[in-house]
Length: 124
Image (cartoon, rainbow, N blue to C red; front, top):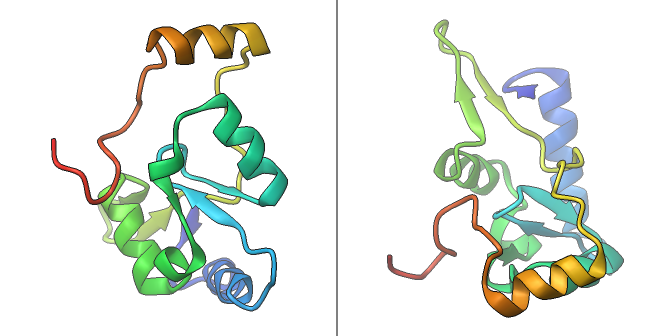
């Protein structure tokens, strides 16, 4: 976790700002809270039905936007002393390790369980 206001926080925000300048920009899967490059995005979409959870840099790459998203998806932690920490989306997440046939089966029969709420912009 990254504490707000620290040098690590400044580096984190700088990294988000830098994403906006790249030609192959990372996307953020808010379902998995994972930053994905182009190749990872393709693999991710083959394994999971998370297309509606992928955000482009215009939707997350600022301090205010990433903080609001983190708070909305319980990735922003406030300690008893009032200090805030964000779980970094750049850190790999331990997703279930399934082989291709297991993934195909789960996607076909609808048994892929969702860990988070509905995608942004959809009603429950």
